[in-house]
Image (tube, rainbow, N blue to C red; front, top):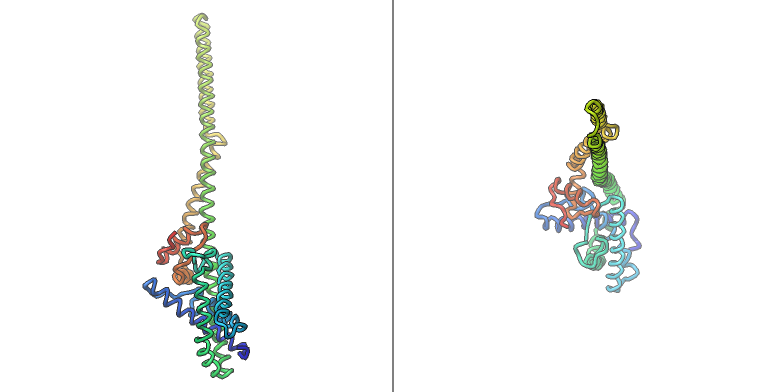
Length: 325
């Protein structure tokens, strides 16, 4: 395999991208009972299969003639590629584009034993069968023709990749902003609870103070029963006047600065809450075609617990059933 040129290796990459896309699209479409344009890209390319195919070819070079070592080398190399790719995509885009969590012997949902064994079998198949046929055809294509074909494929691939990365970032931003909106609504609710509690406490304190004052006045009434009628009438009038002033003072004190601040906080919070809901509805509608296409092309897409409910909502809005917990 060392006799291949750089252009031929690049062309092999696209061949195995296409082979992987055909396999995945047929398999997932059969399971979903509808056509699924499988993969991260919108064109007929699955880069992880293209990269995996090249890695499996290189991994088999030092193991030539030894089927066991070829199997193991291809299995470990491709599994490592799948692990690194899955982890990077999760960290960058907040989403798993494949998820082996339901399978036994998986690690973080990126790799699992059955998938690794499948990579080993694929290594044997590619090296013993498929690549011989592919290289036989490619080696017959004139170098200048192959260069033109490869350049065209590369141009289309890069355009597709840039659009798909943008769509993945848009989807990530939708998930992040929806989660931030939920967190903000939670903070507002807690703040409202505190403000309302403090406001209620102030009112109760005012009532208790007024009640205490009235009790003191009633006690004084009991203490002056031996006063003369004139003194009693004068004291009664004076006391009633003081009581009315006291009542007026507390009545006017109800809309105090703290109470008014509470009302302003409630009004502001309600407005912010409505804006959050409007933003939530706008984002979760997923009007962007590329984002919808990406979600539909990856029906087994999952994410972390932090964003799960929002991704499931987006999947429902794009015609996907969502991932079962």
